[in-house]
Image 1 (cartoon, helix red, strand yellow):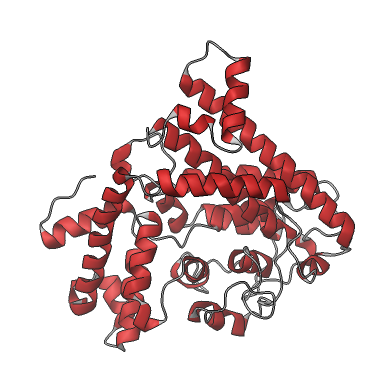
Image 2: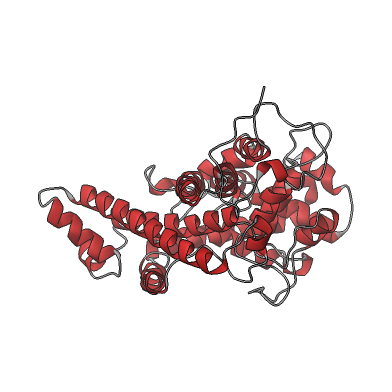
Length: 396
């Protein structure tokens, strides 16, 4: 049976038929492209299922209608596919990268990550992108012949570099690379000094579009800031006023939904216009020319970026630092830090399968095992562990 490839791709798109392959060779599928197989493996991963109970901004007891890491990832995937289809990129690769991009996040969102960074400071630190790579290449165990999911080079490259080069003159960050990335790249060179594919860049900008809009949506619905305040915001205010003009009798929850829908459309349109202009200037004739272009080819216009900067500043001050969110963060800090300190000082309290991964090795090895165990927890599992081990009630 011949593989059914999608409509002709642009010359600068990643091509599943020309993949650089997998670290462990596998027989090709007769019905799916290599990037389809990658996407399907991510969807079936245990780490992906756990995202449904991992915090985006709100923790579970705040309500069932707010975004989790899972619903966020699905929204990112929808936007990434739209961008990829319009730009004639490989939709399956873009979707796969969108679905996988948050797998390495620990419980309790960025608060959990901050605590693990602090706890792991003497032991090579903690980075959610590096943790995603560890999950995809080591921690997921679904195959007899290898650990991890054995994804293609293009998928792993996009996961690691979705924000740009990690080393060299073009790298934005100057701190040392996490050991997980160095170790894997030694065996499977991911070109850490270049930009990723355009599919990875589209998934990254889709992440920006999704979280800015759903944070406005969730923040308004949760009452963390008011409707009148939102009317004065860049981008949001205009969208709300337009929704009110079109639907003067609609209730506020409908106006919010209409405004957010218009905002997503406006941002997607801006990215498509800007990306086409950059592509016309560079005119890459292959995916490797995208990687070596020296600049990101997928992004917002300067005017949109300026408006987004104002919106991000407002959300940071009025939503991410709201006292309700701060209280949840305070509780989350205590939970994650207490669990790490207990498991590190008393490794015999780890579950047997995790204790076996340590087996009396160095403190650094023990710390990484403890970190992997905690990072894989959902919010509610971390709360249950805290209750069981310390006999302290926490709100869930």
